[in-house]
Image (cartoon, rainbow, N blue to C red; front, side, top):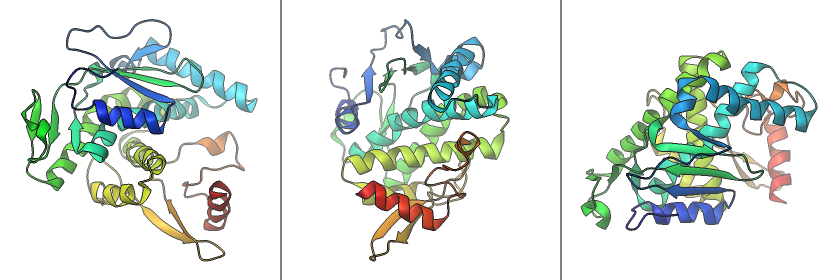
Length: 279
């Protein structure tokens, strides 16, 4: 549910329209965080205690149910981080992509619920946001006008890092990863989440261009670039793909079924999968 006068409401409405499995509710400054079964605050995940253990128990049960085997604890933690960070990054990247507005969300301002199969719910308390000089929202409370597109990209990188850094610290010890490996996962979540949603919006090509400018490489703490490239199908089709900066560890559960963007997946297999998806 949007807040009256919210500069983010239209962006989140477009997100849910394109991807109904994800809904975002905005809370007012005095509204309490959602409570009840399934809800967890991002700050609780960042602390890495009992709330994180309960969160990862969901992933442990899901892997056992869907694949009939137990996954290693570090693999479960990697899955859990992905399932939180992928939608959380969209809170920042979608308003930037659709409306050129970049919100800031400390971990204390985001709650997450995935207890209903096929649904993800995020509740957020917006604070400040950045926008461009020609944006009429620049006069709203909390707006910070930046001079140009590159300055706005700096805001996206900073906002995502501000939110993800404590979350990575909470998950990292259970994933047996640190530093560069964790920020490689963060890079992939920023890129692949927006790339997917933009495809649903019919703007995949623009998203690729925007993400290449956002993450051209050497933009610490992120690792590598957006890493898009083109493959060619048997009839000359142009098939976009990318190479992940990190490994999601799914191969440890299904060795024969690596992710389509995994460096372990050869280009021949990628072409086969992309053509199957297109048909």
